[in-house]
Structures are given as structure tokens and as C-alpha cells.
Image 1 (cartoon, rainbow, N blue to C red):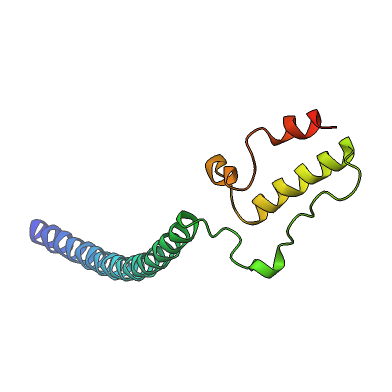
Image 2: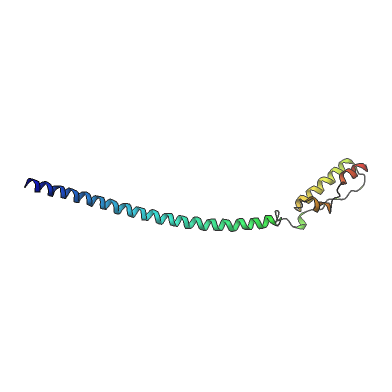
Length: 131
């Protein structure tokens, strides 16, 4: 009888522990499912945002590739440099050269070959020599 009693009490204890572990397991499963759903929704949101940013980057690369850095500037916004009038002093030459460089910068003309169409190769030396 004592042995049967111990066996029955041990079985009750094991059953209660099994019930507690099953409840904990179910709670952990529910938490894991919630975390999995949250992770999936976050991943989808991030994926959508990455696609948007990739489209914006592609657009920026096209704009920069075409050299449209100052897209808001129109031809009317950029004043052409004034020509030499009257006495040609060193200051006038420097001012003219400075205005030419600013004109090229405003027109996004950074290549020396393109500048060469407007700006003689040795204009500074020639202008100083004629003073």
C-alpha cells in the first residue's frame, strides 16, 4: 500500500509538472509566432523602403550623369561676363578671368576641352603681355 501511494503521488506530481510545462510551451509558441509576424511585417516595410530609395538613387545617378547639377538655373539666370571696355589694367584682366570662371561654373562647364571653345588656352598670359 505504501508503494502504491508513493507511485500515485509521484504520478500526480509528474502530471502537474507536465501540465505546467505544456502551458509554458504554448505561451512560448504564441510569443514566437507574434515575434515572427512582427519580424515579417518589419522586413516587408524595410524592403519597400529600400526599393523606394533605390529608385531615388537611380534618378539621382541619371541627373548627375547628365550633368544637371544646377537644374533650377535657366539660361536667363546666368549673366554673361562683360567684355573689356576702355583701359585694360591688370585688375580688369583679373576681373574678366574671374567672371569667365564663374560663368563656366554656373553653366556646369567643368571640362577644359569644352572651356577651350570659349576661353583661349593662353588668354591670361596673352592679356598680361598686351598690358
